[in-house]
Length: 269
Image 1: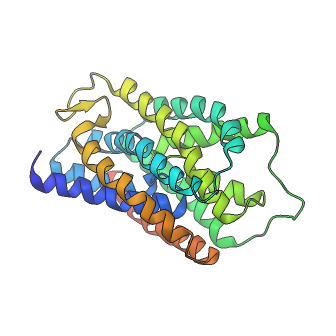
Image 2 (image 1 turned 120 degrees about the horizontal axis):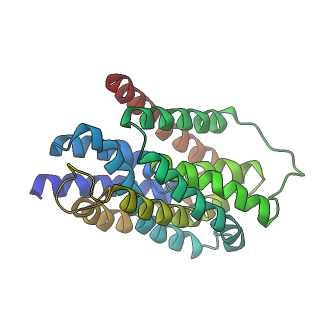
């Protein structure tokens, strides 16, 4: 891999790490479209770019969210009991999402991604406050919700924090506790989704050298090195910024990503 590509993958990891620590998400909402640009520059087959971006993003999230969750845990902002209740459904859902993603045309995956982001943006900007009596449901319901989160994660290459954050806020979980918990929730989704992309992409013709299924290992190493380094920086920012500012940052990131992905999907049709 050339020095230029090493720098590009490291830059993607830097952005992903800061976003992960700041907002409690795995960084996939930014990593996937950025990997699109890098893989396209690399000359990868266009039909495989989105699938490789998803697989590599999920594999990177496995490491990024460990660093992010650890930073938030040190500040007492991870509800591990809730994470445990989400995990069984997430593991199954992420595997299912990865299976579906491996068999869908790339442009349709991009459209699914945009629809998903639009839903999240609407919820973040609507500013609707949940009823004060609302709280997190029991383990069975959380596991079912985890299945939905996991399926979306495997399908569009995110860690699941992008969905779990609005859900936790809707159930009156404080913002900083939500961010830390969402970071931890992203780990099982990323693990299951990444393994699914390795398995479902194995022996696919046209993959770049060094790929493990739909995970591009050389790029992953550069990405992870920087994302794990920068995630604690993002976590420190999260604990120093006002909650409304955090929400606006989250929504703005999603808007930019949604526009970019929609443009790419329209071009591919």
